[in-house]
Length: 208
Image 1 (tube, rainbow, N blue to C red):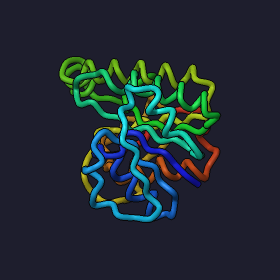
Image 2: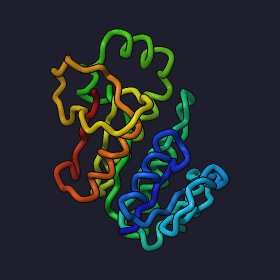
Image 3: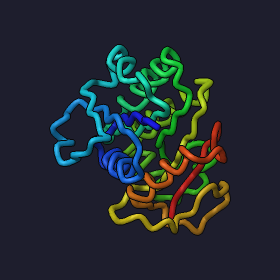
Image 4: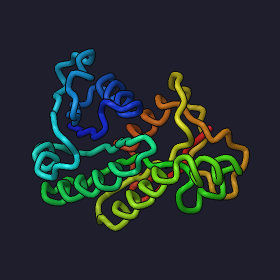
C-alpha cells in the first residue's frame, strides 16, 4: 500500500512518516522543504516537493496512491488547513483516490462539550480562534467531499512515546479527560485506520 502524507514535516506528520515506514508502507511525503526529511533514509520513502496551496502540485502527487493522510498545520494563523484540504480533496477526486484520514482538533462539533473553561474561552475563544475556525472549515470540506474519510479529533499535542492507552470515540458527555495526547499516539491511531473500516465516514475524538 502506498500512502501520501500532507504536512509530512510537521510535528505530527513526521511521526506518521516514521511509523508508516516502520510498518512497511510505501510513503510519499509531500513537503515544501525536503531537507527537513534528510534524516529519513528509507527505500520505501519518496519525497515530493510541493505546496498544498498549488492544486496542480497536489494532483501530481496522487499518482499510484491508495490513501491520503492530512496533518496540515499553520500555527495560530488559520489559513492553510482549510485551503490546503480543499485542494487535497479536489486532487483526490480527480485521481480517483477515495481514502482520506485527516487530523483536526478536539472541540469541534459535539466535542466542544468535552472541553474545559480554559480551552473553550482562552485557547479557542481567543489565542487559537483563527486556527479553530480554520479547522471548522476544514471539516466542512471533508464532510461534504463524498470521500471515504476518517476525521480524527485529538486533544492538545504532547511529546512522548506510543502508549496506546488513550481514549477513543467517547461522547460529548465524557469529562474525565486530560485533553492531551502524544503526537506518537495520534499517528499510531491514524495509521490503524488503514486496516479498519470502523471509522470510515465518521468523526472520532481521541484523548487521554
